[in-house]
Structures are given as structure tokens and as C-alpha cells.
Image 1: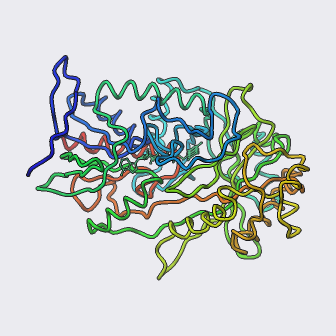
Image 2: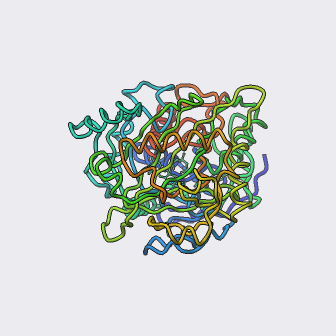
Image 3: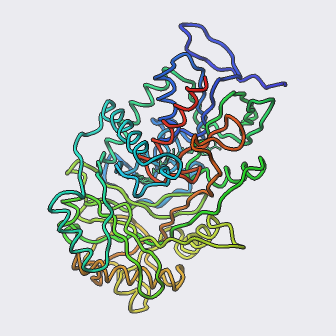
Length: 482
Ligand SMILES: Cc1cc2nc3c(=O)[nH]c(=O)nc-3n(C[C@H](O)[C@H](O)[C@H](O)COP(=O)(O)OP(=O)(O)OC[C@H]3O[C@@H](n4cnc5c(N)ncnc54)[C@H](O)[C@@H]3O)c2cc1C
């Protein structure tokens, strides 16, 4: 087989070699790919590993609309070709709040492949590596007496608090940990950023990767870790490779922003409350997600569609006066529809069409049926941390989504009075895309031998801890074979 030679400087003493063959190729330098690489090199330093990442390296990942070294969030999304929030070394987690959850109750479905105990061991193992690279030792928990009181109060109002330990790494610390991991790994493996993989081609029991830049890479073991941002690309690859995809869900909703005092009695205790509620009207589950005390609302760009997200810093000097969290409604589709990803994108694109990006509306205006405009927003007691376009979310979200969200806000108001205030801000649309799930073995191997899929892009995780755990799990399985 003929390969275009990629001229690569690899660190073998002072020797410079050109290479187009590696033992293992990892597509994607998000947390799952990083921890796969970490485990592989840690346990077998002689392996030749290449990591291919579409986005920038950690130093050049700068979102022009979020200056992470200050609290200036005033600029709009610049529609960069490669979104630095979603892509680049560190993956979607690089500018994230870094909430590291110790649980199998949420954050993915890894425990459908391996036992709960094994998943927890992997999550704890990844945490120990994070600590080695600078993570805090402090954990919040829903198992304390104070948390049990919150749980009881929630239950009295038909809200269900999920149990977990959580570490808040903090946006700035998360970034520093990743920087150290980058330096650690780049001394041991070949990391190519700004290098997108175009096609995966099985070839003579190995894999050939066709890169966007025209080069080719050959490997014996392939670990695909493309995250949510690479989900559409990966689904298309799987179809071409004849790999079965299982229909998955899409979660659609809004991000709520309100004065931090309203949730302080909860966030001071558990930091993040994952609350589930089944609406009376539709029987749909609505959940709180990604709670950011004293945080900031941010926009993110998924394949050209601007959606909303949030984060917060650990440094008190960088805090805002608001808390934000998502309210998400899960949509699981049945036959014949099998493109939940596209459905989510279409809904989000409506807010982009109307507002040029993310829309923001006051809760009171939404309930009253009027648009929030510049003037009304300027009267709001809750000051937005994101410069979104004031608008009308009822022109974007379906009636079912809106009814569910409104019912949930009134339910939350009972345990956190003030949630349903007129000036509570709703940003839309927040969409959690999950990749179609691949059929995988308990080793997370696809039907194609030695091709593994991990993390959010494989549709099996949706959070830092389980995504990282899946990377370590696959690394160990490959090490057993080698
Ligand atoms: C703003 C934000 C905040 C978040 N906050 C939290 C949080 O506090 N706690 C938590 O648990 N989770 C959080 N998450 C989710 C968490 O970041 C993800 O679950 C996690 O990053 C998934 O890891 P991954 O490795 O599977 O994928 P990703 O981190 O998405 O990484 C995949 C990488 O693959 C690259 N890629 C894709 N396709 C290709 C290709 N064809 N060629 C080369 N490279 C490719 C992408 O550029 C990307 O860098 C947050 C996400 C976002 C966006």
C-alpha cells in the first residue's frame, strides 16, 4: 500500500525520522483520548502513538468571545472555523467548569458495558492522575446531613436529587491541568493539532487514516474519540464502514440565570444539584444540568450552530453575582425517525436565525407571551452575564418543551423560592447532542477488530469522568493484547 509520507519529527534522542506508521492512533484529543494516551504511555512507554486533533493545541485555544483571563464576556460568537470551546487539545472540557462527578448515576452509560465497581475504580484512578497534575482534593457530596435535608425538601415537591460526589476543578484550574498533561504527553507521543481525520479505511487488518491535509497514517490499533463536536462526522464514517448505530437521544432546553442567593442554600452544600422532575402535563423528564454557582453563561459553536452553556471559576475574584444551570428535556425518538442530532440542530438554528446567536428572555415575559426586547432587558434586576439577543423563546422551542420547562421552574421555585421570579433569565437554546451509540463490546471495541470507540463521540458518555474512564479502560484492553 502506498502512503504519502508525512515528515514528522519524533523524539528519539536527537534522531529525526519520517514515519507514517504507528502502533496506535487516537482520533481526538479530548479527555477520553488524553487518558487513553496517558495510560498507554504510562504502562508501555515503547509504544508508538499518534494523536490527531482537529482543533488547536492547548496554548492556542483561545475563544475570541470569551477572554478567560478576565471577566469580559461582552463580544458575540465570532463563528470561528474551529470552535475553541469545543475543539482542540483538552476537547470540549478545556474551558469547562471542570465538575468532575464520581458516580455512575449520570454522566454516561459506561456501566452498561462494565460493572459499576469497575467504572468507579476507573473514575477514581483518573482523579488520582488529575490530582498529580494539580487538581484539588476537595470534594462536595450529596451524602451529608445537610444534603439529605435538601433531598427531603426536594422529594416533598416531587423533585429527585441524584447522588454523587463532585469535585469542582474550576475553569482556570482545569485549563492548567490540561496544559501540564499536554506537556507530559507531547514528550512521549506524536500530537498533531489542526489535523482533522477525513476517512477511516480498514486495510489488511490495520487502519489507514486519510487526513484533511491529504496525508495518510497507518496504525494497528485505532481509538476513535471524536466527542460531541465530531459526532456527525463519526456517524457518517460508521455508516460507510457498515457499523450499526443505535438511535440515541437529544436533550433540548434553556439555560437559567438568576441571582446566586436563590440557590445558595443548595449550591453551598452540594455545589451542583442534579434534580429530576417528571412533568404532570406530558410525563416527560426535565432535569437540571451543569449548575454554575457565581458563574457565567457562554455561547458555544457546534458545527456552525450557536448554542448556550455555562461555567464558573474557583477564584472568588473571578465570580459573578449569578448562578446558572441548564433545564433540559430529554427526547428519545422511535421509528422511523433516527436523526435526533439533526432535530436538535434545527431547533437551535431557529434561535440563531432570529437572534443571530443565543436568545435571552425574562421568565415573566415568556409566561406573559411577550418578547423581551432591549428596553425590557435593561429593566431586569438580574443582569445577564452573556451578551445574548433579547427575544422570544416561544418562537423557537416547541410547545411541549416550553410547557415542560415552565412547569419545572415552578417546581424548583418551591425548593429555591425566587426561581420563578419575573427577572429570571432564560437563554436558548441549550442542546446536548449525543452521538448515535455504536454497538460495542465490553472492551469498547467495534465490530471491526482493534478499532475502539470511546467518550462522548461513541455515545456512551456525557461527562468528563466517564469519558476519561472509557479512555483508560480501552488503553488497558489494548495493553493486554500487545
Ligand atoms: C462548555 C462546556 C462545559 C462542560 N462542563 C462540563 C463539566 O463541568 N463537567 C463534565 O463532566 N462535563 C462537562 N462538559 C462535557 C465534557 O466536556 C465532555 O463530556 C467531555 O469533554 C467528553 O470528552 P471526549 O474526549 O469524549 O470528547 P471531546 O472533549 O469533545 O473531545 C473530542 C475531540 O475530538 C476532536 N475531533 C473530532 N472529530 C475529529 C476528527 N475528525 N479529526 C480529528 N479530531 C477530531 C475534537 O476537535 C475534540 O477536541 C462540558 C462541555 C462543554 C462544551
